[in-house]
Image (cartoon, rainbow, N blue to C red):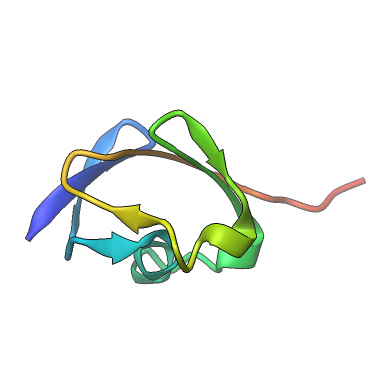
Length: 67
């Protein structure tokens, strides 16, 4: 098991894997978050194709509806 850095903390992950697979292991629905991978915004349509590798950095922000 290796790690990625998600929101500033080390998170164990079975790598390589896709952004989508990582989100699901973190109990996050891919449609409910915005993701930046190594400083680059990732389109939700790319979550199932973008591969994560050891030491990659993610910023994950949950989308919250409100009014």
